[in-house]
Image 1: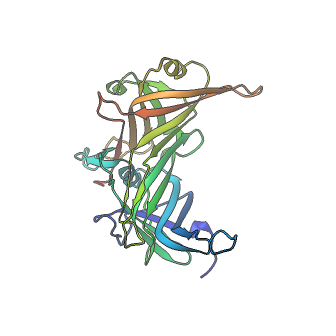
Image 2 (image 1 turned 90 degrees about the vertical axis):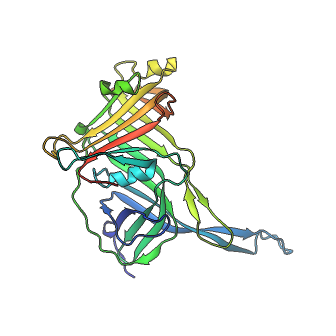
Amino acid sequence: MGKFIGRLADIGITKEAVRGTAETTATFWLPKLSLTMDDGIEQAVDESSIGVIEDSPNASVVGKFATGEIEGIIGDDSFGLILLSALGGVSTGSATQSTVYPHTFSVSQSAQHQSLTLFLDDGNQDYKYPLAVLDSLQIDAMVREYAKFTASFRSKKGTTATLAPSYSTENNFLPQHITLAYASSLAGLSSPTSVNVRSVKLNINKNIEDDRNLGSLDQTDILNKQISVEGSVELVFDAEIFKTQMLANTPLAVRLELTNSDVTIGSSLNPKITIDMAKVKFSEFTKNYENNEIVVATVNFKAFYSVADTAMISVVLTNETSGY
């Protein structure tokens, strides 16, 4: 065992063909900004009294698991697997311009969204983590920065593996590639009103839970429960946009779109991620009046399920990957 820096650790992901059965190779190795991936235990503490004031004579392991968090720059190919794990459903359309595919990710009405196998290659040992289920996904878009994601996972404990990380080039998204827009309805997002903003944060939370049975230290399954979508927007305060809707309790359909117009795929298309939220309401509109600074406003929002549109959130990813 030797010492090494975090840059020498590699993280890979792939979709599981059989839920909870580890795959052997990664589909994508993710360039990372930060990474945690560790095994953990659940303990049962013996709180019996044995004639002394010390609180406990023993503890025993009653469950094993692993948790991890990956922060990285959004890539137009690998991000599809993360979106699949986040929302659970995907439909891939026919190729356009020979090589370009539209992938539509939607919320699967299931407690068993797609599981992944995670692969960790570090300076001392290689591991694979089966039954990796996404717990939360945060998307960050802000000026002067690449668009980023932070994905948190829970899985079965790791087992040793022999790995050979191999990275592929992906297309990323810069601030000039990102727009935020709104309309009074989901259908209206075909011709929306754009908003100048400094940053957008979007959080998808899955509220996952271990499914455990007697007779085993490992999870039988890891299940997602209710999905919530929340976020915040920061903008220069030059109008009452979003504050007016907040006070009037007016819902809006909101679109966050990332289009790398510097790259052409097919003959004339661009890598693109379009995130549509059918029914958004705003809250906690706050402004900061620092003497020597431009006044900016921050507004929080929450997406709700739209009965009329039978959807809360959907994502269309356009790239040259043929399927997920």
